[in-house]
Length: 169
Image (cartoon, rainbow, N blue to C red; front, side, top):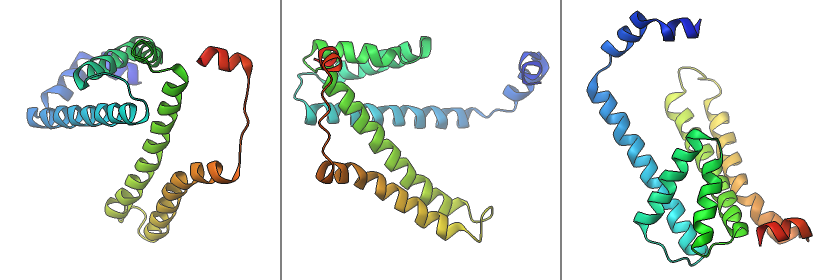
């Protein structure tokens, strides 16, 4: 059914004839802004955790090239990004640690953001349960921030695998 609607030229024309150009420009602006913020956060994280000598323009070029590589072959951009940053003095182990940290940060931040989004826009849909869901979202978001601190303080992992150590170093 979806294939028939996509391949039908009449449906394709109807969809694009109803689009307003100002909405496309707003979406393009917001997409560009979100990509810039993501590049900026990753660039600052790499600079603060590991002192590598790279400027923002060159890091943006590496980031955008890795995104294009991921479009062609999924997750190949991650390999490309790691390879290029390894040439600049960032080890693969540090690269993976930074990527896990950023993924954890994005997960906690987006959970926090979505709980506020439910509070603002979800009243008509879930009017009786909006505050418990909001409180639950805030608790999940703050627990995502606290869990790594808990593991660092109370639980010690002595993970030493020679094969993984040889690959990463």
